[in-house]
Image 1 (cartoon, rainbow, N blue to C red):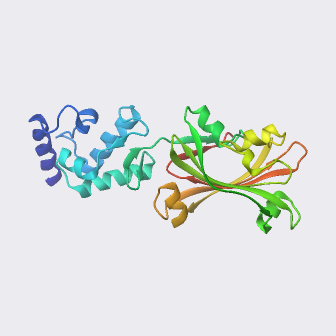
Image 2: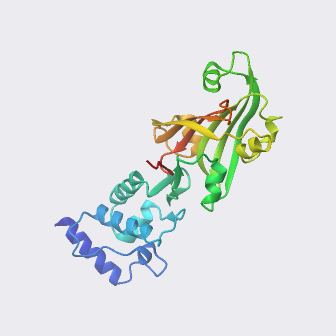
Image 3: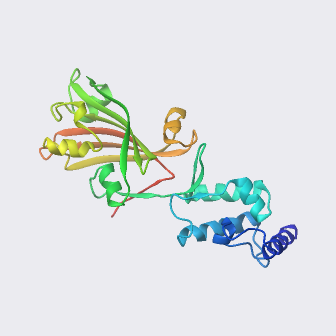
Amino acid sequence: MKEQAAVARIDMTDSAGGGGPDAFSARIGRFRADDPLPLYLQLQGLIRDAIMKGVAAKGSGIPAERDLAVEYNISRITVRKAIEGLVEEGLLIRRRGAGTFVAGRVDKVFSKLSSFSEDMEARGRIASSRWISRSVGIVTPDEAMGLALSPGTQVMRFNRVRLADDEPMALEFTTIAPDCLDSVDDVDTSLYAALERTGHRPVRALQRLRAVPVGAQHARILEIDTGDPVLLIERCGFLPDGRVVEFTRSYYRGDAYDFVAEL
């Protein structure tokens, strides 16, 4: 009964002009007095429908919890519960210090070997990188196993944050076998483009994917919360003659990426 009374009160406020033409509720709709669902589910439904219909565009922000609470005449706890549910569904993402936004998820198709830059370009998004480090060093035991190299071999390492439209999407730690590139400075935005110029672009790959909780350092770089799920992908890329050219560990944001496999 309390919930129904609250709905009726909200409806009366709306009809009396509780929210101007530019208000969020004017775009996505108001609560209905005859809806028996709890208020947080009603708010979820309104926002979800707005996203599915394109009323709330991908990448657009939604009002702060306190503003939604005032606009819909409900408690911030109710708003928070509604938003948390949509974040868990992957429809909304939270960016620390920036607010809550409609998720612009990316489908990554496993059946095609492509670079991050190519994936983003195919979806009309602008790929860029924020470099963590570029270096030459002695192969580690893990790298030696992944690249089938002897201990003591020198390799090139490329560690960077991958961004789409300036939004952090993934952390990428790549090791390249020797003699595949002239210099670590050969790589700008796309590693695969640099490898293609030297005739060492992989033609096939083996990938392993698993979900892991993100650590504090990686979470800070990806602008998500510590412990949030990320997708860890380990990839070995092969040349036509069977040699391994690339060993990569990538951490993809779980709230921004869907991986698709055709069977």
